[in-house]
Each structure stands twice: as C-alpha cells, then as structure tokens.
Length: 168
Image 1 (cartoon, helix red, strand yellow):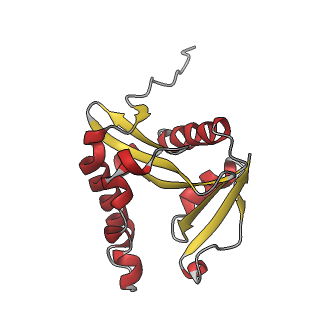
Image 2 (image 1 turned 90 degrees about the horizontal axis):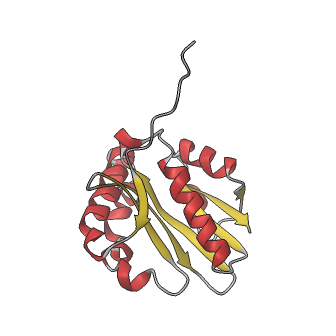
C-alpha cells in the first residue's frame, strides 16, 4: 500500500523587507480587484486603492509592537498579513491577502498563526479584524482560529464588513 504524503510547501513566511512594498501593493490590489472590480458600489470597488499608505511605508508603520509578514514563493510575494498596534492592549490583523493560485495551501493560516503568535508575545490581550462580507472563505478561516463576531468599530461598517475579535 502506498503512503500518501503531503509535499513540502514551495513557499515561506518572512518579515516584510524594505523593497517588498511595490510587490505587496500589487498583490493586494490584484486580489481586491478580483473580488470587487464589478461591485455596484464604487466605495467598495475603489476602497483599497487609496488605503495602502501603510504598505508603501511599512518600514515606518509596522514598528513598535507591529509586524508585517509576506509569504514568498521563489522570489514572488504570494501572501501578506500584518498586525497593527492600536493601543497597549489591542491590535488589529490587517492586509490578509493570498494570490489566487496559492490559495488552499495553508498560506493564510500560516500567516495568521504567525501574527497571532507575535501578538501574544508582544503582550496584547485582543486582536480585532474586519473583513468584507463577501469573503466567506476568509470568515471560515478566522472562525476556525477562534475569532468571534464583534460589534463594528467603523461607523456604518457593518454595511459591507464583518467584524471579529480574538481574546489572547
């Protein structure tokens, strides 16, 4: 009888590097476009494009109990995720994106596991995140990791987003 083994991943998770910004931005914009390019509301359709200054300036933004991770396959960035400091007790998981051809390989879970581990070691008590309501696969991942539904923190945000929190 043949024993089936899972092949080693052809990707690795590592901290953001200074020259990663253009590729990380392209990935995030491409994934957003994939999901929302034909959304009837221009707010949703164009939401991400003007909100990536944190990626462009990640070396300055993701310091002081913050972390930006990249999943890399060969030399390409195929996934991203970050922890952004909100205050001494709470942080936010942001920028969770994976390229379409790399989905289903455990990349998002590996990034999220790394971010949760970082948040614990940084002394946070709670991680929050928001996710567009259409991204149901992402919601299943977050829920499987222990995130619980939370009240919206953005005024009117519940129109397009689901909100989650994880007590550490």
